[in-house]
Picture 1 (cartoon, helix red, strand yellow):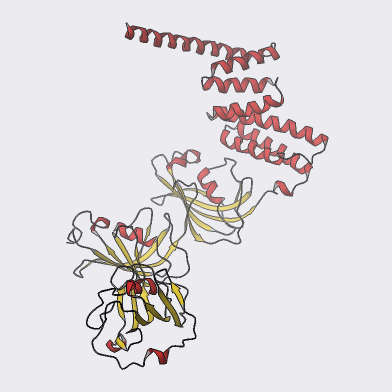
Picture 2: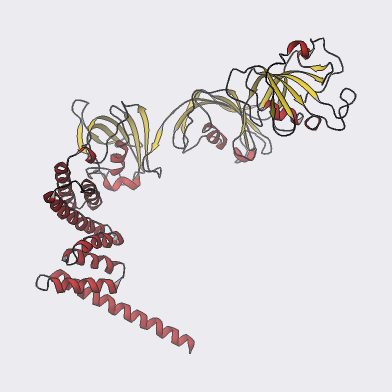
Length: 531
């Protein structure tokens, strides 16, 4: 608390200033009472660590004014919740809003207790404060260990803050403890929060800032020092005056930071393309050095058209386009993990990243299944299944699998189908399960393949294709007994048209022989060790 001045103020007694009929509230459980004289002009209240500025008058209950900040001509300053003032102040001022004025009646246990503060404050004194909260500077411990303390000098706009993958534009001045400028950027510097810039503290802090916010950072060596920096001593704090001018939103399309989309121009509305949408785009593909390796679409009037997620080109770019709105312009960065889908694979053989400058001119979404009548659902299922067949023949097994899964959604709920439609949907369902199982076998998802075949066998126990493909899946995951059961049954059902089944049976017997031999070797080794 402010030290009580021995000179008595000429201020008017509290009784002449207070409207005693105003309601009084109790704060906490230790007897602190508050009566608001003037409401604040904001909904915010200060938090522990904030730098507070207040004006106050203080007196002993039923006594005269002992001390006043008004006499000193400037507000009293302290840090909230740090034990720099009496407990009653820390608890009471934490409930105030900017420009609020209130009377706090503070019992001895929250003031100077049994000892008092001689000579002005006797033991066990109840103090009455008239406090106006002038302002405060928010101070945040960003790292939780005191390594980076951020004091807000100017509040930013809105609520949004940059995310981990965004690109920010900042101005800063970094100074040593003695005031020497170590680094600055008066014109602003732009950098990706993924890569960071200069000091780790800047990257960590800017993620907590809003547009236009100005802050002062006090940084301990662990968050800036990696050797002698411009003569900076490794045991001294660094001060960074930081302003967040703006940032560009970057979307982590795949969730693993391998496909990033930076927004250049916002699109219209809220709708986006989905799987199966016909989209119209214009884009240029570049390497990091600026080399153009691909162009699609000449202009908005003559764009490139394709259907989403049909494997027509780079899957990473395809998925990025599905996050865009009509008219949106963006730069998409794709890591080398997605190059295998690109038509210019040879050009990109030594590249780490591709950059696409892209505009989504327009798109048409498929009619959702819940808006279709029963006939349309059956027709849509059949069409999409046939699209999957084309993709399978082209060797695009992952894309084909997605098509079969999508086709099934249209006939998932068939309670409203008539008898003919139910018959068609059952045939389509079994075909989609079987075809998708073939896809799963091709891409090595053998467990999924066996599950899909089991769904067919549950409906049609003598389906040779389902038995054959499930046996294939079991064989790949070394479920040899189960594989033998399916192969045997397939041969019983169709003994005359079973060339592939017989070949697989030979493969099964070979694996069983190898497995038996392996068991014998293990058993022999165990016996020799026991001997």
